[in-house]
Image (tube, rainbow, N blue to C red; front, side, top):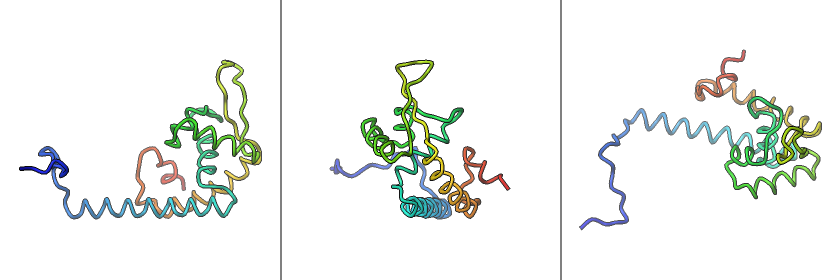
Length: 150
């Protein structure tokens, strides 16, 4: 009798080789190292890691200099109400501001303030240097702008 709590390996999934496990382990190690660096840098700058990420995702949103709360919630992988709470705290700190869209009055745009921009520029410069140290580890199409930027 088979234990229903024990997962049955799928026959379509092949086992990884030792070098593949090593590569996956190294990638996860370097990713965690980078995240630890990022969290520490944000705290040293007087922000929480999520506050830094919020600022980054506003400035880094594709094609424009602002984002909606829903877009930020998606980028931060959090519930909408959690993003609203984070946004409110950042707004109280003078890092961001909400503006009613001029083209669609139902939409609220989230913009960086000058203060938020200053924090972000400082932290982004630190992150760029750290990413350069990981060029060989993170060769992903969407971040090659850092890898190819000399």
